[in-house]
Length: 215
Image (cartoon, rainbow, N blue to C red; front, side, top):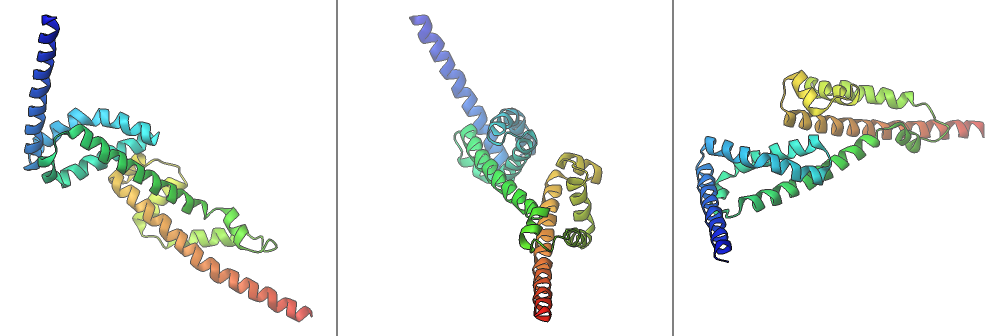
């Protein structure tokens, strides 16, 4: 019984010492100590990655979230001075960030899907079944992209490369690749929609005109 009590007391002392060490580390990071920040990353990034992988079910996205979260922690490092349980703090903000990333990814997939051939056939009258119009607009939209966004978009959508592969090939950061792809997708979507609406209006007008002539 006495031995069990001693073991429990030893565990409490070890935990207390660990908590004090972590608090000291957090205070150092809060004051701008880069070495302390690297220590914090080394201690927690692997376990955090496993946790985020359960949420995202994507190793690539989990790695991206971990990097984003620790970048955010460094950018707002002064807040660490008031954190008592860093592990709980870390897991909460990383889970929230992961869920936000999943929402953005879902929206991006919807935008891309809206550029598919089925969307064109839906918007156009069935007897106007020339998908060349769509592909011409898509090519025009890609040509109007800034050079770097165009490269990122083509490597992602045509060559099916992942963020990390594109980043390596173009010597960019993963975050820059992600932002370029999002901007390119939005620009292409807006361009196609804008010109497609005008095109549909012209085609409908011509169709009405020819019906009028037949009558």
